Image (tube, rainbow over all chains, first blue to last red; front, side, top):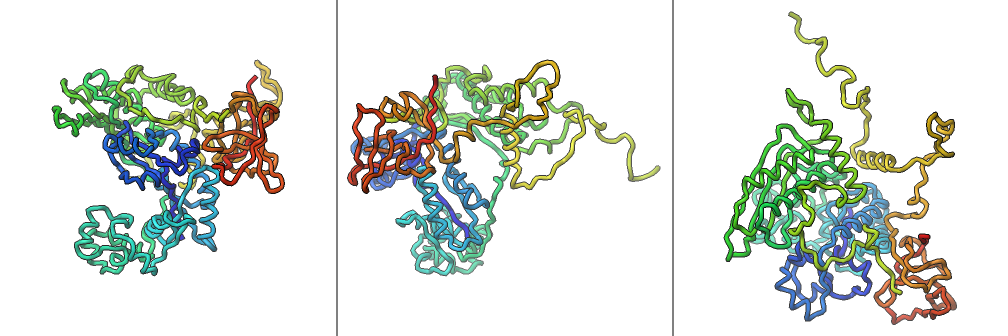
Length: 414
Length: 171
């Protein structure tokens, strides 16, 4: 038996733990730069605020209905996610963290999975303050499907087995995990409108529509496990660090600062995973929604002569790539740095005439990273990253980082 | 000319790796790699606590009695994933040793029994009081005669947030 534990309206729930006054009130959380609604409380959903709605379109609606609006507080969400995950891990050592708010748990061998699920749900709720729902099924796809239904149950837990025709027939085909919007249109066209019809369709037909991947989804719906639990996250092939700017950026020097920061961030990611990057890409874009403005976007890639995780080298190269694609006179909205073809450290091919990196440089970068991780990133950084960072993200309605910063922990009422 | 077999002098000279000494591969189950690396990292960051003062200059006989580390986290935190820190505000709990601005360690996994100091969400705000159960009624008791006890009623919007397990008071 596989369980999918999913945090309810996760970002909103994180905010509510520290702001109990917001219980039972409409709350939304906005994406980076306060762009669009990425999390909604049930009360906000009931007001008709759609997922992904641009904030400027719903601002009035929010004001009229007293919706509390937050900028995203990723430090808080990341820490709360870590807590939820570690409580879950006590109940099922064999688990797969699927996303920031979802984990699959392997409950095979458990006598009464539904009872255990209720205990898990209660414990997570009490310990972390985050409400979760648990869906149970013989396969990951069924567990995922059961989770949708669990959200509507009072108990927050629900089990779906392959034989439950009446349950499957009530599920629209586009709600099945692994059936995207494009596939669901093709499936509906041939009459496969719900999960039951999809599960009963001849497998050759399913394969012709969506290939073996879709056929696997179909088998999973019939209770035949085809997707393994992935305990160890697959090493990433690429990593990207990019953000939209808080305001349009025109000058090369500000763009350089931003790109240097993204390069540092991306390099830190690969260093923490113990990987080396084989190539580097830098891209810049103007705001394509501003049709009144001149548009420009470009990207350029460079291959390192040997895979590297050298911060300084990545930053230097990122800046020179940027300079080669930068055009004056545009209002840039976004930039990013992509590290490509990551390979695990130790598996790299050496150069014929050169040692791996410069040992003094390596020591310097390691020392810099240690200082930054011990004393905060504001203590030691590269000059290229800039001091003021005027271009940085807009998060005007962010709550304090209640759990990750001593200066911002909750203060009790007098 | 011979084919195959050992070629003398081939490969990297012995001991020329970047550790400057012989190395040995150790097998770790893939699923445990992250855990073990994290464990080693954590240990490296902890300061060893010596059984007696360290005398500089010559090797201390006490080195044989290295007693591992004292970690305040393990002393103050029983359940890391359920533990939060909050800051006290005001003097209503002065009798319990909680001063204005003190740091409170809050364990959400602990049972809020009669007599425990708890964090309660009371009408939408977090507050610290002593929890009392008496004849079927629940009370929030301040520890300062200038404040009134609060009787918890059904209609109040209250829920227990966590149990205060330690106070950290800076002098």
